[in-house]
Image (cartoon, rainbow, N blue to C red):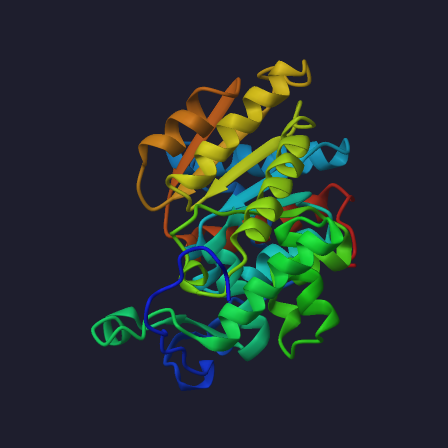
Length: 319
């Protein structure tokens, strides 16, 4: 039991198998190789507003990777909840993404998907009786990853990925963190304490969690320090990741590592203040914002990237 003021009365924590999940693996996006005719269709989109911005971002990502430059993606949890992890994993395997960063909720969805092929609790059903968030396997696994990270000097994202890999979870091929660990790509988790169901665990080792997410912050800052002439995407994070990104940019500039010569793009359903100011407007020479549902625009982005890289003769085989 943690010594950090646990509840006076024991909490009722239930098996994950009893939970209703709103998202199933069968609903996830399917990964396609370059589709004949797609690039012609994509290039025929109007050179106006959102489609013009999307074409520019695709060109810049492929160009950046052709020159060995950084392409980072920071995510909100909704991106994984709507079944887009297979597309992100494919881009990682093909070398088109070099860093993935996200919040604590994404790590929970990623682990649950790897463990049971389903995620996304029905909060409206479970909140009234106080069962929301109290699921034994999820709490144990994420706390265990934080403890492992503390013992091994790992970041939280790496520890989660290696826990999934070494545990041979049945759906690990759908885990962004598992694939990042396998490929040696940085995948960092940036926890805001009190935001995630795992923080309700009375046995949570808060010191281990804090230290592991701090390691991830410095690993994130190291990647941002290599962003010159690269590309950084913010996908569906309104607050946490834009704030983390801004601090990492300041660290990089304090060290003399980074000018404003890079591209950022925000993908979201709405224009949010922090994403626009902290990602699109303040840090880079060039920023773009594309308004669209994640489950529509990310498949378009994926296919446009693989087709463009293929047309330029630089598409890697998936590792």
